[in-house]
Structure formats: structure tokens, C-alpha cells
Image (tube, one colour):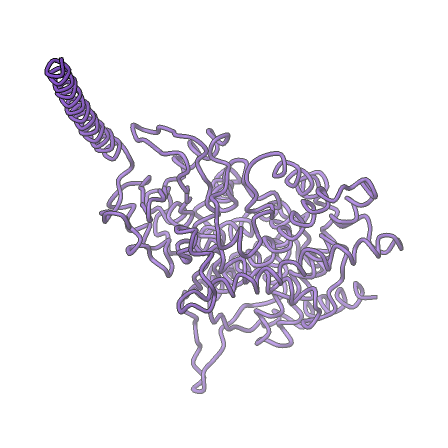
Length: 529
């Protein structure tokens, strides 16, 4: 009996062992097949993805990302890999678009899936810019913020700000006439005065005004925090938990500093407007005043938070980009004096020399408009735009574009495409033939794509035109001279950040005649009364 039981047990054990071995073998085979299938899928997926530079295992293109002036390298790569290329940084896909048509096809025609922003740990989480209109993800909050801003900047109401913009332009020109070394500081001060007055109803008192200095600081912080590829924490989020005292991890300290500045920029001007609006001192011609007039005590704390983040975006987004554009204009006038003479001749013929130009003169001055457009093209203030993010998998022109990819519009490359703009590094307003349709092709690229296009375009357009036309009507922009009396023409040297600007632009604004300077001085004095 025991023998029979033993044989039965031995048989059962043998069967279980064979079954176990078979199961293990089956599992191994299935695992191997899964691995092989996965590799096959990845192989074909990789081969259907956009081309790009060689990717190293694990780190991808992390070591190849250019830190300075990346738009130049991306434009070079586009010549080798095409107008839509892909970079991989530690597993994060980045699509770089250097074709205006491709950008329109994706970010405008498919804007429903290309309107998100990438999750920027440094700028969004650590520095606190994540809820600002410019970095807000596409959704209800974004639409609410954009509606607030778009209403105040729509073509139907923008004329309300013309007097404000023209007055600031005249003060700026007079300041540089009297002190040529103040070009950059005066440009910054007077553009900020326009934006703070328009946004909050606040009048800047001078270069030491705390609201002015805070605005400048928050813009500098944002530009650094959003610099493409500059912060490893954006690709390896766990790094945000490393203490700031660990060598090489000072970015957390910088982020805390920027967050503190942002808090002041969010609330100080808003509370000033709120207090003075109640006294009827800030109203009508300002974004904050109009919102308080319409909503008043009906604003919830959530709506108030969204509003201050939208308002600070107006202040920040409009300041540095406009400063960059004006400095680029001055640089162009120094390097291409024949353009300056031609624009002045148009102003003299259309407006004469007995009055100052107005924003309402724009449509009568096609060459001056072309000069402004060429500035946008020649040195775009935001050469890589603000990155978008792809919400879901997509296919384009036979290529697979994966969900979550960061989408970078190479604005510089698009506006320096020699097949569209011959001799792209030359400043040639004539290339538009005075046609608004041709100029619009530039501004449609320079001011963003689809649902993320700049809502303040018409306001910026008025500010830049007012300054450019006033400079050309009143002054000759002339170079400085060295100790030997030789003219010093600045080189085209640009800063490197999300927002770029020409460096070391030195010049003088020389009045074209005593009469036109008298007209300018009289206008400034009258406006200050």
C-alpha cells in the first residue's frame, strides 16, 4: 500500500515538476516574444519619428543641446535634418519646427492638441510662473485669463491707448536726445510707464520706482527660468528635492528668489489699483480698473488669482519684447542708414515737418510699417517662441509625433529662411513691397501661433510704431565716435535667453532741425501739464 502511495506521490511530483518547468519555459518564451515585439515596434516607431542628431543611449541629445543662442544651432541642424526634427533629452521628446508652413499645419490647424505648455519644473513649479497666462496649460483657466486680456487689447478698443503711447514715445525720444547714454534705460523706463499705466492705471515715478524695478526683476527671472535646455531639473524632476547647499544645485535658491519677486509683482500693483480705484483715481483706461468696474466684489479668490497672473503676464510679456524691438530698430538704423533716410523721406512727404506723427498715421506710411516689420523679422525678440506641448499622439507627413513632446517653433529659422527672405541677415524693408499681406506673414510668426498667439499684438504694434515714427520724424540716429573721431558702428551681438536683445547699442539721437526739436519739447511740456 505504502509502495503504491509512494509511486503515486512520485508520479504527481514528476507531473508537477514537468508542469512547472513547462510553465517557466512558457513564461520565458512569452517574455522573450514580448521583448522582441517591443523592440520591433520601437524600431519602426523610431524610424517613423522625425529625424535629428545622433541620440546616445539613455541621455539622448542632452550633451548636444546648445546653451547659448540655440536658435542658430537649430537652424543649422534644420539644413541637415529637415524643417521638423526631433531631439531626445533624457527620455523627453522635443520637436523643433523650422518651417512656417509646418508650424501653421500643426499649431494652428491642429491647435486643439498643440496648445498646451510643457511642464517646466524650474519656471512653473519652483519659480512660480506656472499660473501666469503665458505658461498656463490650455483649459478653462487659460480661456478665462485670455478673455480678460483680449477684451482690453482688441482692435475695437486699442485706440483708447494711443495718446498714452504717443506721449511716452515723445518723452523717450527727448530723453535720449538730452542723454545719449540713456538709450536702454530710457527705453525700458518709458515702455514700462506705458504698460503699468495701461495695466494698473499706475504712473511710474522714475527709475527707482519700486513697481518699475520689481517689474524688471520679474522679467529677468522669467527669461532665465524659461531658457530652453538650461535647467536639468526640467528633464529630471526629482532633482528639485536636492538641497540647495549641495554643490551644483544652486538653482533651487535662484528659484526661491524669483518666486519672491513674482509675489511682489503679482500683488503690489493690483492692490494699488484696487485701493485707488475705490477713490476713483485709477479707472477707465486700464485693464485692472475695467475688471474691477465690471466685477467688483463679485471676483472670487480663484478669479482674483487668475487675474493677477494674467495682468503680470501683460506687464512682463510687453516690456522686454518691446525693449528688444526698439534696440533692434536703433541697431538697424545705425547699420543701414539708407533705410533711415528713405523712411524719413516718407514721413516728410506724408506728414510734413509741422507736426509729430500719430499712430493713426500708420496706414499712410507703408515704408515705415515695413521698417517695423523688418525689425520683427531681422531680430525676433523671442527667437524660439514659447514652447507648446503635444496633448496626444499625432501623425504628420508620414512621421509619428508622440504625446507629451515639447514643441519648439524656431521663429529665428523661419524668419531667416533664405528661400523666403533672400539675404536674411540684411535689413531690407523693400522685401514686403509695402503690402500688408506680406508683412502679416512675419507678424503671424513673430507673435506666436494658434490659440497661444500673443493677445497684446495690437497694443505692441501701436507702441512700437509710435516710437519708431517719432524717432524718424525728429532725429537722425547716428553712431557714437571713438577717441580718434571715428564712427563706431555696433556689431550684431545678441543676449541669450528666452527673450533676446542686442547688446552694447550706443548711438546719439541728433535732431534733424531746431524747429522739429522745438515741436517735440512743446508737445512733451503740454502733455505734462
